[in-house]
Structure formats: structure tokens, C-alpha cells
Image (cartoon, rainbow, N blue to C red; front, side):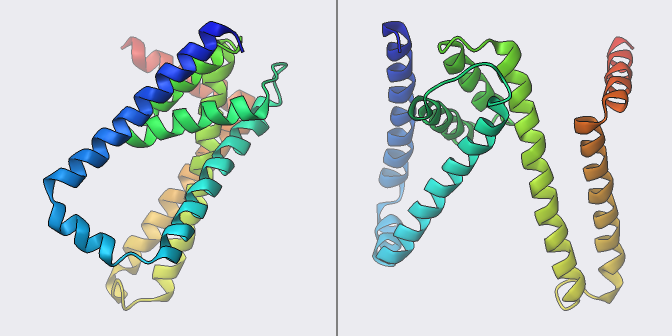
Length: 198
């Protein structure tokens, strides 16, 4: 890694750590009694379990993006790749921007690794689409659970669950068509361009 790349990575890392320290400091000083009460009731095994789940989530995010990144001719050592993904996802969780902050930071850092924006941005959208597909499947599971447990929603509200299930199904089909069907994707882009010109 060149000197300028290393400096950029250090500056962004310090920025992320600074935001996290500021958030923790604010939480600590605004309501100390409640914070101590929560800390007293935390069990060590719960903290370890939460840390393991967090580390697994970060690793899964990195591996999913790396799977798409392998389709490109660019190669980055995994330790640097993981650090870039870690920073971008952490920023994405801290700053509520609909995912744009994470995409911007990721694109900026990968640009320092000689990966152009024209590669990083489409890959980021592709990964978000895959992620949303997985979330849609999770939502399907939740809706089926509600359907099998009418005590949560009441018999008359099953129609609402059915409407949501059909809506999710339509959303998943639309995302699959956009992702895998070239003709439909071109048609959808033309319609969006036409709508933007109005």
C-alpha cells in the first residue's frame, strides 16, 4: 500500500473511532445511573455472544462483497479488503443515509487501491440487491409465522398478512428480474429515464 493510501486509511479509521468514542461518551454522560444499571445486569456470556455475532456479520458482509469483487480483474489482499469493508459498514451503521455513506467511503477507499468507481458502485448496488433478497426471505418467514399464530393478529387481519405476503412476493420477483433479466433491466432503465425527463 502506498504512503498516500495508508494515510487515507488511517485518517478515515481515526474518524470512525472518533465518532464511536463521541457516541459512547455522549451516552455515558447523559444518563449515567441508567447506564450503570444496564451494565450491572449484563452477563459476560451475553457480551461474548453479541461480539461473536457482530464479528460474524462483518465477515459475512465482507465475503458477500468479495464474492462479487472476484468477478472483476482487480485483486486486493484480504486483510486490506476486510479493513475497507469494516470501515465502510461501520460508517453505514453510524450515519443514517440509506446506505450512501457506506458506498461513498467504500468507493473512496477502493479507489486508492486502483479500483475505479465504475466497478465499485455497481458492485455495491448488486450486493444491496442480494442483501434485500435475503431480507425479503426473512420477512416471508415472519409473515408465515404470523399466519400460523392468529393470536398475534386476530382472524380478521389475516387478509392484511396475505396482502403483505403478495406484495413481498412481487417485490422479490421484480428484484430478480432487474438483477438477472437483461431485457427487463433495459426496459426499466428506459422507463426511469423517461420519467426523469418529465
